[in-house]
Structure formats: structure tokens, C-alpha cells
Image (cartoon, rainbow, N blue to C red):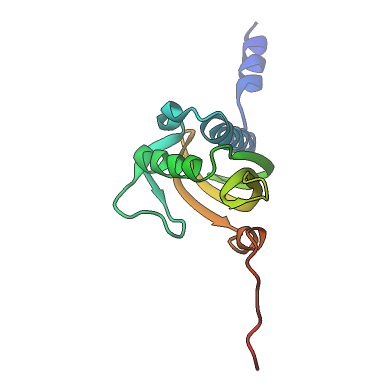
Length: 163
């Protein structure tokens, strides 16, 4: 009986490597859920479930003086105002310890770029988000977005300088 009990307890333990792999998988799932729940389903009331109170966004052009869930709500609302039907597709998710990288593509109608019938043309955005996670919540983020492609989609031209 003692051997059986010892054998069961040995099976119940998880090695540090297995624990790290489980944590990385959980973090990847949380990053996927964040994108789906907040940005695709627009469940902004769920922001505190995904974003830590001490969250900081290190991305370019992030408003200063705002942190935590309030910042994410502000950013999401601005995105939805600019692109009312914006939807994200996750292309890749990679985790390394407490860091999760999400490669995404977003598609939305561009109210600033109308077709001949006066309807907004589609606009595709591409980017990556790097999240540092703690206990299932994002505590830091770094976003990079292709800023040239939307300009080209709106009809801007790249003109090389004259020598």
C-alpha cells in the first residue's frame, strides 16, 4: 500500500520543465483569449480579467499618464471608432517564459478611404504584440505595426528623393 501511495504522489508531481511548458501554454491561451474577447467580440467589461492594474504599454504613441485597464479600454475604443468593423486574425503565437509574442493581421473598413460609391474601402493592418504576463494577466506590452502599408492602401505614393 505504501508503494502505491508513493507511486501516485510521484506521478502527481510536475517537473520544472513541464511546469514551464504548461505556464507558457496558459499564457498563449490568455493572449489568444484577450484578442478574441476584447477586440473581436468587443467585451470591454472583461478588460480587468486580462490586464493587470499596473499594466504599462511601451508601444510608440501610447498616451502618457494612463496605465492599467483604463489605458487598454481607451486604446480599444479609439480603434473601434477609427475602424468600426475591425477584426483580428491571429497568425502565430509564441511563448518564452513570461513573454508571449502574437503575430496578427487585422481587417476593417476605412472611413477615411471611400470607393466610387462612397463606401469605406477595406484596410488591412499587420503587426506583432509582445506581452509580458503575470498570473494570467498582461503587465507590459510592446506593439509594432506596419505603418507604411495602410498609407499605400489609402493611395499615398512613396517617391524617392531626387539625387
